[in-house]
Image 1 (tube, rainbow, N blue to C red):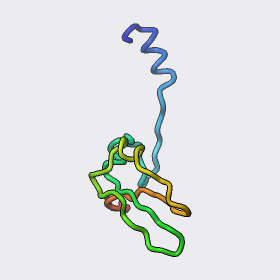
Image 2 (image 1 turned 135 degrees about the vertical axis):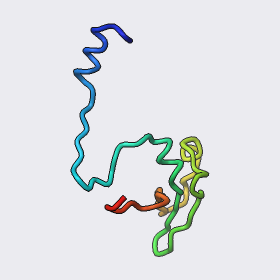
Image 3 (image 1 turned 120 degrees about the vertical axis):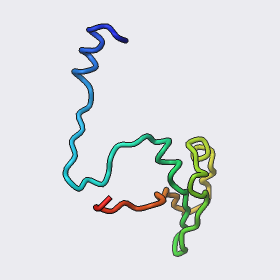
Image 4 (image 1 turned 180 degrees about the vertical axis):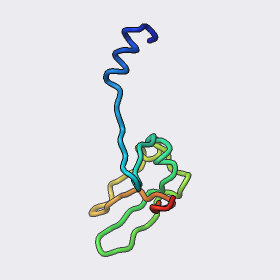
Amino acid sequence: MSSPLDLALLERYEPVLRFTRGEQFFPMGARAYVRACSLWAQQADRPAVRVVEEAQLTLDRLAQQTYDAPRTVYFLKLIDPLNLRE
């Protein structure tokens, strides 16, 4: 895909990203994001329990995980929350 027509088409429809000063959320690949997260499960009226540790979670493992516990919410937690100074 290197013809002038292909390049013109890519340039015309390429995404344009704009951020404000202090923005904390930027695009990143799903694989890297999931790898940096841990997987948690929480049942009603109980504290959340870590199901998979940080750096152990992959897209494949996330897809193969069983989510059949009744009334359980599963969520990802990023290792280090960001702050405005970073």
